[in-house]
Length: 113
Length: 113
Image (cartoon, rainbow over all chains, first blue to last red):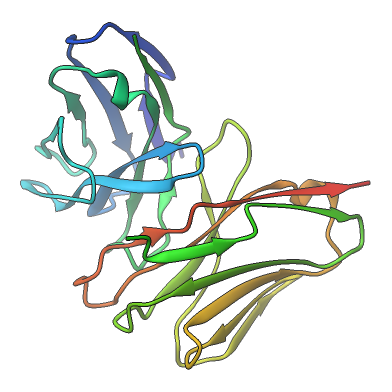
């Protein structure tokens, strides 16, 4: 049972480039979410989804897009990378929402130069 | 506005000692208070959670104390071990989903042998 799998583990982008961070879960969880973790800032919610076809914005959504075409996958797209998006990104899933235990992936460390 | 204030930022404890991490919140709509533990290079993992209908919850060496009137909750780690060295995050949300899960900024715990 792999849980939540994030790829890639590391990525370096130049300003203005776009990319997609992949997230897949094999637990049949309805709820999936993306967080960014910055030093001294804790975890901040970017986008979340309560089921296939349904997404919504979190606390810091600007510069990011998401879609949820299947229960298993929840990719995060950076449209035009900026240095302010240098961070560690975590994908998480849970059975029925934010008030059930979140299962986190091991993160993607992104550097934008 | 920081919705959940966590302190201290870092904590050093001797093996066998008690580690105490505190969190405070303002939003009275919050009714779910989890704690997450994160080891370096890994995603956070749920450690223990409490709802406001109880004042204390214990799981092994980990105890959450909750003070609804003071809007504070804390994590106590009894008989702290070097393996407990990690970053701990408190969080809060509302069951109805009107308030998204928000995290404190984290406490880096070091337990010296």
